[in-house]
Amino acid sequence: MAKATFKKRRNQEAILIVGNNVRKLRKIKGWTISEFAFKCGVDPHQISRIELGLTDSNITMLTLIAKKLEVDIRLFFKRYEE
Image (cartoon, rainbow, N blue to C red; front, side):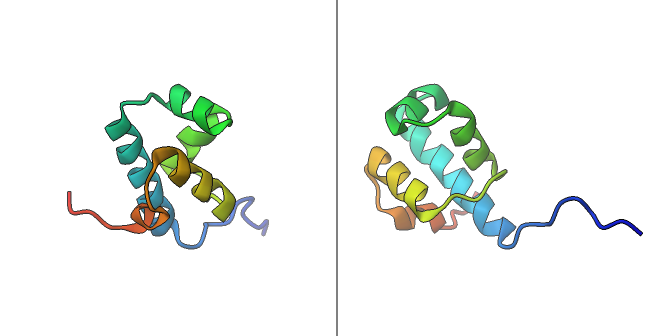
């Protein structure tokens, strides 16, 4: 029997929380994904993947994003009631 070609990422819930919070904070600034990606110096697809929870970001990327959004990085991990 062949093994699955992908592994479920650990902490998927945390990855989704971070992505949702990055999106909310970006929208508060009134920036499109393209505008924000330009400010961060990354490809817009990278920002999109982070916001959708399709990739887990390293601390360097999260620090850069927090700096550009002018927020404390801890806000990325906060759970908000919908």
